[in-house]
Image 1 (cartoon, rainbow, N blue to C red):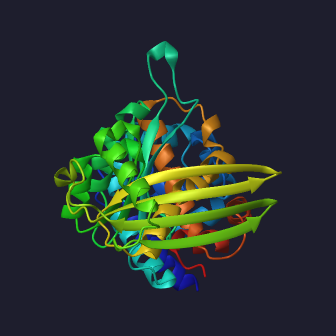
Image 2 (tube, helix red, strand yellow):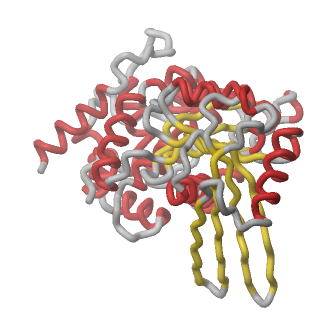
Length: 386
């Protein structure tokens, strides 16, 4: 166990070998790879900033010295802060590419899902602004592999309105081959659809009024076909019903070939189908309906379409929710540009590592377990958990 874990830790350290150390060579006492691995471990265990990282590391000094090269002991909080402030977020994230590829391959094998849903969405860190310095709140666009529980990429912007430019940048960081990319209406752009198809993936893009003629024509076509119960056009329907926590939700998915005369269809690379998702919810005697419309490069396979639509909300329910509730990310007051972005990535990556543990414990409980049990921490870090 010890020899195997040491080999795994050495592999983790090697991910940072090519990262240029941003610190001055004068008085550089702590190896960069050790500083970063401690930061990852501390965030897994619940640290929410450089001070907390250093405090956790001091309490775990004997454990860390046994596994990491620390010739001058545990770094101070100022070391962690300086490193995370100086590292360029793009270079820092790039170091995780090989690590993420390995985690993705393991997750594919464990889940049996060969065509993962890659949900693309943004999240604002509400208290990360600094009005005195003219710094807006950090808005990060992430690519979340829903079935795998992995954040594969993150690109930061200052405002939600910049998502349109951030989404292509995030997708460039991800292997799209075989994946189904889902994006809400703001990201429903012809250039993005083309990028996904050229990358070997498929897309399911939500439509709203901002798409103008395309949205109106899609809604009109689907409603017109409903009068004949969608007969004769190759449409397929799939329905689900779930009851939990005093709420009943019924979902109906309808997918059909895209009509050849759909206005603007030629602008959308690989467009094959249009679809609709209807959510009927009853909670506390209150009944609600919600209808969403989509265009897609997927052929008419309604279960596949339904899975992609449903899994898109995984980034909200299983990623963003955890970051808000368990990581308390919305309360973070880290306001230095690189530091807040690098810490947002540490949060997402540590959540991804915890998601790979298939036990039924909550993320909050897994984080506590990592802080209590050093062997479990090593298992989460090295991906050797069950």
